Length: 309
Image (spheres, rainbow, N blue to C red):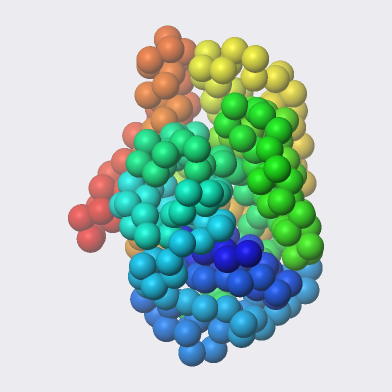
């Protein structure tokens, strides 16, 4: 199986590396110093599930060099979806499966509008990690779950195939019964985790330990969930407890990747997190006072980064 990873950062690099380690034919599409390190030294993974130095992996900055692939992991940042969707066209054959895993709830639809919905399988990643240095992925907790499924809820052989190869690579794949519910479930928590850890520049530990910020976190999840129920009426009530249970089990040093982006002077994804909560709330008539404040507080920071300040 020929596998391409469009956006071989922390997430794409981890799953691509594990698959290459298991013997799959993997291409990583990256750029800059990270790409040069991958070409020179291969990919290194530091992980509580086992370290790895993967040399049987190919890296390029040009999808045209890869050619048609059987499977594409589409793992670019949300703001890059449209441009990257056009760039992967040379890798798409008639049967190519594209698994997309961005924060937020709109990326898979935006991707499908460009490459064709038949190719796209929405996914949700539950894995903490970062690029520790060029060519090195640091996986920071012992879970690496990738949840995916057909957008219409149908059973498919291609999702079973994906589950089998990911399981064979030692990761934790799950075929969702309703991937739209899974997308919204992560969104309700991630929109809060990203906004609060970025604004405060704190890990989840101090935010959980402080009574006021802990309550703010819970209330913001509930606010996003209220928007979710307006958009997806059958969104399960268990989303609230599941999110808080997940938050409580996170390592205390955990924070959202958006904070890493801020610290490195990179653009933020606030528009696709609290920004989307606010906009969808306005559209559906659901008040979002907490996320409105979070979004407004992040906006000048994000604008300054976009301007190169």
